[in-house]
Length: 395
Image (tube, rainbow, N blue to C red):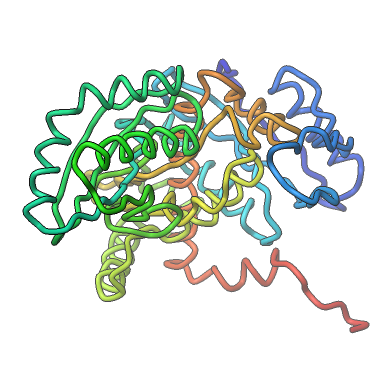
């Protein structure tokens, strides 16, 4: 969507921001940005038939509040965009934190965000009688790659096999198969193709057994997610001025760099693959709003945060090597999820890269805001003021 020279303003009501009128005004703003009505976000029920094939023993739909953070100004691979970002959450202060980070980033111009790698990997394992047999099968798998590409081409029009790597572990052969999946996450397509390839190799090499999810990276934190990436690999970067940090976050570049380095010591001791401070917060909220499989959060939140000096200013970037998101298939094109993707301009075919790039820019905004709150010692006070489940005096 084109950028208006005047920044977007999200309607607010200081008297009661949860009253019907400010909610209606915000929904009207979002409908205008999406270029279409948003009835389900406004409370219209979803046809239960839309859930067919996505759930069993249906009884209804979960209701999670959706707020909008922003506006976010982001330079994507398709050009600059100004969006408001839908976030589904029950954590008070979350949307406010991300909005603050987006205001900070806007001062210096668009956040640059790019998908730099595509590829959904699957890791079947085949078991042989001996290491020698596994080694021979390893050589066969490399030779037979063109055959496997034909197998995949017969099973799907939307994906393709783009890489085959092999590794012998004792008497087992690990295959690393990488697929492109278009605008879908593509897990089911890749699993079907992987099963066909592993079965073909097992037959031709006399494997005792094969397991499609042999080295199971699916929906779990793992080092491959950080080093090799999975799904879409994205990075976002910006330079934030010293003056903007002082005005909006009440901190300095030096303090932000110092706290980031201190956190890195803690991360190293933990052995974690997530070197970001609150990526899981923002990713979970946007993924839930946009109909993504939230169980992939364990992989998606894998990544790196970098703060460094850029003259007197702050250089900030995030690296998200394993974003498993899609704009077609699954729950992406039904009910409120479809409307939230439309709000971002990411609905349907051709939207997945843009969606991933908006997600990375959103994560960067959240990292800056939270680290600023830590350095200014405002984190606890903000949650006390905006946080959820505050008891009333009567209680």
